[in-house]
Length: 104
Image (cartoon, rainbow, N blue to C red; front, side, top):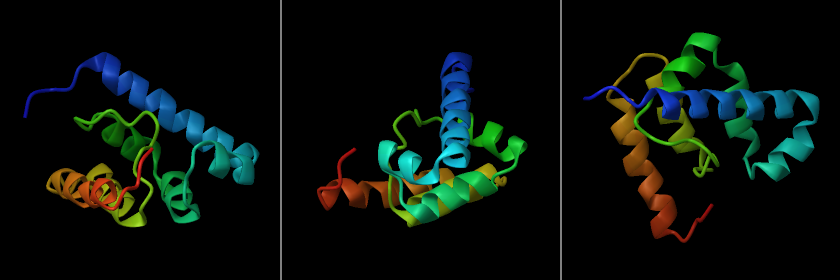
């Protein structure tokens, strides 16, 4: 797979850091503003810096954290932990949100 554009990876990483900082400052407000489920927030807070960086380098623009279901974030967390096959799996699982009318 070709390498991701560095500007997209930087945007993803900055956004992930913004979400984490917001969750640490005021969890309830951040959950509402970013339209996150609590389990998704917990997963983001549990990621190490290296895992965040790896997730930011996924070939997917993460701004908006448009996936809300925990199953999608389980796969993204597995990708961030080094299981490359989890990214395509996350995208397949995410498609069910669109089919179910779940929109960001």
